[in-house]
Image (tube, rainbow, N blue to C red; front, top):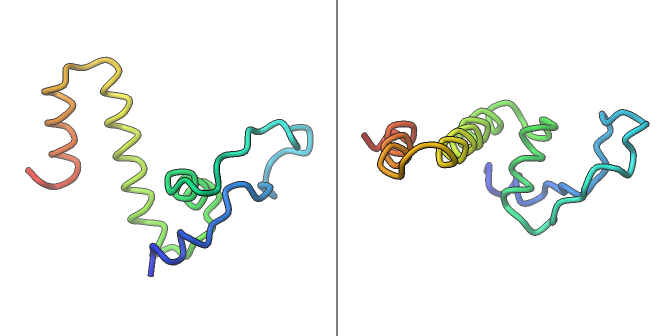
Length: 88
């Protein structure tokens, strides 16, 4: 399933699409972090399309809510989270 595929992602593996001039300059993320694995899988498109679609939506939702949390009141952020997650 999706979680099994995500567990096999190694975010510390070199990004083959990174420009050669940036080799070694991109900070390595912790390979044990589920967020690092999810972000690497979505950014580098390391999984099948049907696995990437829900992961991309989930990652984008969390990034949107995190960005809103830096400038909006808690009540608005919670409303956004409930709305975007489908609980409202």
